[in-house]
Amino acid sequence: MRYALEDALKNGAYRDAATELLFQLADDDFILAYRGSEWLGLAPHIEEDVAFSSISQDTMGHAAMFYQLLHGLGAGDPDHLAHARPAAERKNAVLLELVNGPGTYLTEPHYDWAFAVVRNYFYAQAKKVRIEALKNSSYQPLAEAAVKVNMELYYHLLHWKTWFTQLLSAGGEAKTRMAAAMEKVFEELDGLFSYGAQGEEFTKHKLIDSEDALKARWLQLMSPVFESLDLKMPEKFAMKSGNGRNGEHTEDLQTALDTLGEVYLFDPAASW
Image (cartoon, rainbow, N blue to C red; front, side):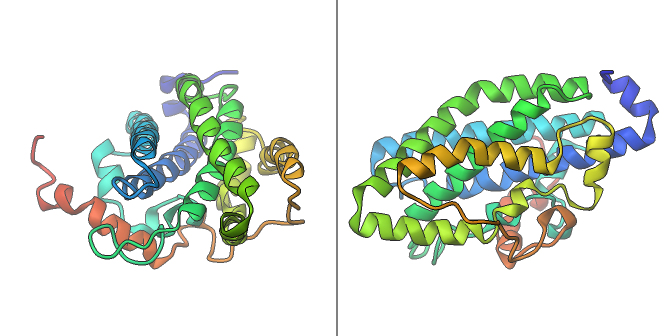
């Protein structure tokens, strides 16, 4: 059975589950798009500046789409949801909020390109798996949004896969840095696949496939890439810094939200 918006609004348990899932989707894209925007002018070359900026813009557009669906379910104004919610209410995976590296965008930004490549590639593949599952979601507006998002994901995934394979194939310092970046990402990767405390409600209402199913699909798609590069996939992933789906976050998120919400919070009633 597919639920339209009016059906979801009549079923409190279903609406709550759909709302929780949408917050996870929106918050993931929102914070990673911001981290991507911090690379503007700092990427390895000007063509990458343009490409990464375009990907980040797409990703922020996906977040806006999910926040708009939340608005339809009665969660609040999309701008408020994006800019004014405290860190403890955010549902994004911790991996996506971590800083790009030492320094800040305006002051000595010593960012780690290897970490950017690994994080974005692993996330793009996880997002692709998730969006494919959402195309069959019982919530019709979400299934329709997934179809739109999926059209852009192909290019995101191809972009980051190319960087990933080229840097690891280069050997030397590039491979050493990529290995260190992968170790860091795998320490938090399980958070991407977690649904948090309300996960059982997602599958109960057929909003999305189970955590295990999505993780298995990710492994199925990533394992051939690892094998082709003579890499070993870890036996298990971790959530070293906590589960962001349950509101557990690092200081990195609060610092980012302070910047992201600065203009909006100055005058929330202003028209732009």
